[in-house]
Length: 110
Image 1 (spheres, rainbow, N blue to C red):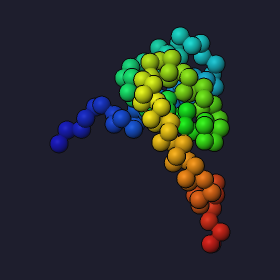
Image 2: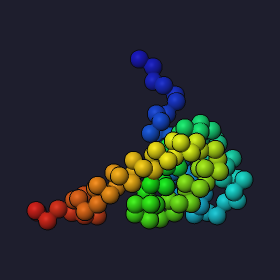
Image 3: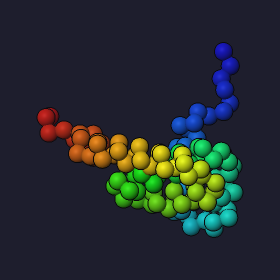
């Protein structure tokens, strides 16, 4: 069976988030940021979902640069409906999981 050459939506959202953070760290000009984001995708739904995940992380935990990531993806054409839905879901998930054992919060049962 042949593999698809198109990455899964989750992979694309991760690429958007990672590359936006890279561009922010390297202080790339806004027009160039948008051009590079568009090399990954111009799909407003995927841009909106990635923007919302970053925005929700910012709202719930003030995750480093997530507000800037969200604004960059918005400028690249993120659909605000998908952004707002993903942000609400991310806030809910992160607040629910706060304080639970995991990376950075090991269990005291060891």
